[in-house]
Amino acid sequence: MSELTRRRLMTALPIIGAGALGVGFWKMLGGMGSGNFDPHAVNAPILNRPVPDFSLPGLPGMGDGFGSDTLKALTQPVLLNFFASWCIPCVAEMPELREIGKRIPIWGIAYKDKPEDSVRFVQRDGSPYQRVASDRSGLTAIDWGVTGVPESFLILPGGRIAWHGTAALSMDTLHTEIQPRLSAAEAGK
Image 1 (cartoon, rainbow, N blue to C red):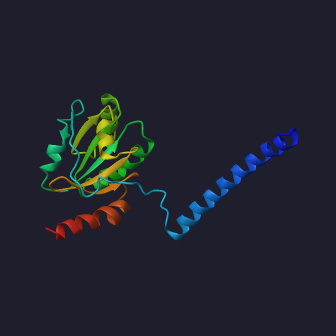
Image 2 (image 1 turned 180 degrees about the vertical axis):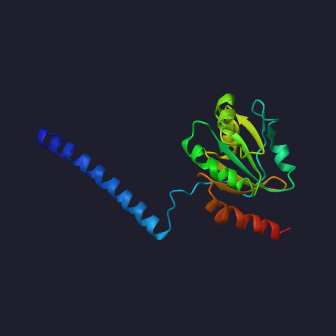
Image 3 (image 1 turned 90 degrees about the vertical axis):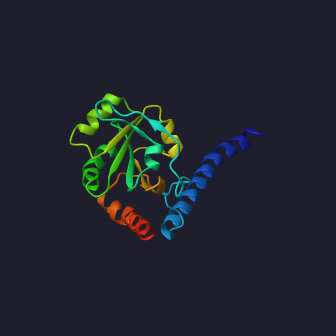
């Protein structure tokens, strides 16, 4: 290969790479515009299935933990919220969680967090959680399909997972995503 050919090839490679990247972004934006691509969509194979098997300890001074047996024995729906004290969106959702907790019980699982940090975080402005467990290793979260915190699940009586949210909870989420599923479950009784 001649020096001139090598220089042309070295000049063309970044241009080809930038072009391919541009086409990829153009297709992604086109998909978002037409509704065929949702960047917030998460593959959630756990939906409409029983809760995965687990058993977690509680946080110091905050009662016993809980596990899959406890969730499967539920007679009323609960929201299960994975959180961490080091998570900024978790801090932002706490006021909303306190309001949502007035309408539906919320149980929490501290994800990859030191128990003492979780306790301070939960008790700082008033806990929205009726029960809290600690998943220090993060292995339980993997079984639930958690990709980051905060993430939440609507658990129906009997322990069936009816909804999975991958963003901070809000009253809007309660009204548009969770309440319709609660109403449908209630109507299906």
